[in-house]
Image 1 (cartoon, rainbow, N blue to C red):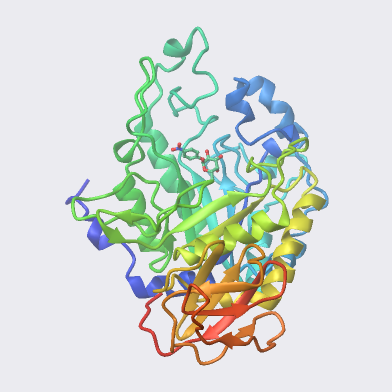
Image 2 (cartoon, rainbow, N blue to C red; image 1 turned 135 degrees about the vertical axis):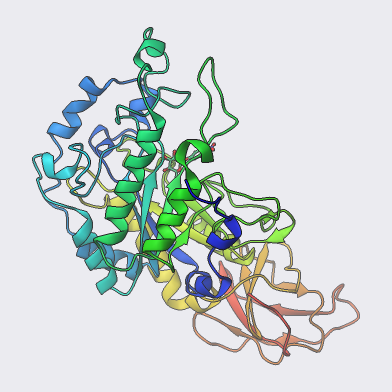
Length: 431
Ligand code: JFZ
């Protein structure tokens, strides 16, 4: 190792993240051997399955209906502007023809690389393209058995750990990341997952920056793809609060915008349609249309992005329930996209059961529930130049304050979950 690398020098300049903030909405895709188990991408861990028993998924992996052009079209029609696919999830299986392992798609019955057609198809639809890459690896012989490993309760776990060499595994990751970031043209995002430095268990320590050699990994990423956005799960954060490049709250939308060391950060919430990330055939917890739309609005109203997940099936298709959810987004975004793209939090406080998003002098009032005729909006007296429903550009009468009304201004709105567009007088808002 040469001189210590400074995190500050390895974070991406703010202006290189402008496209990401503008985009606001992306597609996550979790796909791997676990699609065949069809009961959560952690099934190998949850059911403590050994390599020999997990091998059936490898031997039967044959997604004959894989058509990334269709995936990309569906993502674009949903209004999504970027995509992140699991090139390797925790199970260790690689969706590309990696030269440093045989645990890869080209050795399965399918026999072909999945990554190049993915990159090409999504680029052709105009989306930015990213890779998820798991730091955790439940298959690699050098990855130690630890708290998250399927074999953690194996009676011989300690013995099985002998000779496993994390340094070799870190070099393996660099080799793979080099392949991913060299062979597929410009890549816009890399999403490492995940560190747990404080989660030790029995004799098994957690893992973080020293184990992954995160500085070296990040330096390599920057060398190969100078403009790539890197997520924050490498356990890298220096005293001044520098860390790469986006903060990633998972399966919850924060109540307030997340901050790191008191500073605003670029952030992205990731969510699922049904609870698990990998395809889960029998899962009963699919989000309904209102939940889906509110997730997106809630996120943008706080200044974040939403990365919404699809778990394709073992045949390579999107499940019809996922397609339905994508269509919900598509229909809503076609009419309301301009309250989302490039929009962010408002300086104004939204009324009860509403959210504001704002873009320049346009204020968007997202009405989540029927307000019994009037919505009273504080703080906008004398500021609103015009008001219209967003979906049909129909004028809405902006009421002047009257003594009997307990608020200064308001509008009368029709029933339903709708968005109002209010051009207001030049507020100063940075998104
Ligand atoms: C991780 C993965 O384990 C999961 O399968 C999925 O890929 C998701 C997007 O990312 O999930 C996590 C990561 C970190 C924690 C919990 C779940 N954590 O630190 O508690």
